[in-house]
Image (cartoon, rainbow, N blue to C red; front, side, top):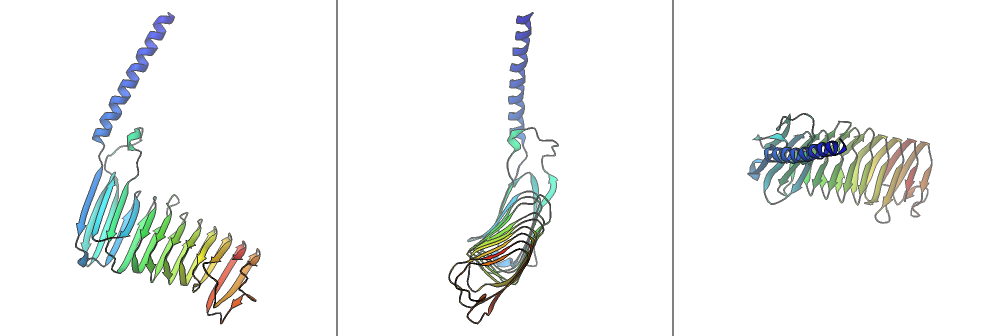
Length: 283
């Protein structure tokens, strides 16, 4: 009886493994992926409008205007009135329900390349995955991450004359960039920057910290963190800055030795900072 049981168990395991390999191999062959590689005429594009569901988005500078996508959804591309519109549809291409196949565990990707000339308007909205902007020069930009499971936003080596960002749980990070006339607001996520110039802007966080490291010395802005700290350090010794610090339940710590009575020079560059439950630290 024991031999019969072991023989039956061995046969079952063997058949199960062979069936699984056959099924997964069949599904891998028939997995419906949508691949797009399209080059467009750069002269006809002054604005970009991007709306995605769950793909990683990279928008970067390059020689030609192109759209590349690989993922499980359809991609709608249109160019009208000098506005390039790229939309990832909500409907899945493969029509599957629950995902038991490990071959499907990959991230969809969208890469949009634009020429280095200044872009007039940029609008990007994404539900879940990350948004990365690299080496762009934009007159007016609007980013939106309103879903509770939204990914982070990264802005690298870019310049914005005007910027709006609204995120629910999605942190935004600026690196080696120039940000002017910005209105940046997050509900439960940080605002970060490194080696960045921030001018005539407002930074608001409800629950989270504002961390600005190696800040350019000509920066001037207002910032508020309701439940979190504000930490600012300078790239070089500031020369013409006035600090207006208002921590309600917290401490103000001006560790930068160049400030005398929270002022340097004429104080033309004003940092007006507020916290409700958090410290304000200037290094």
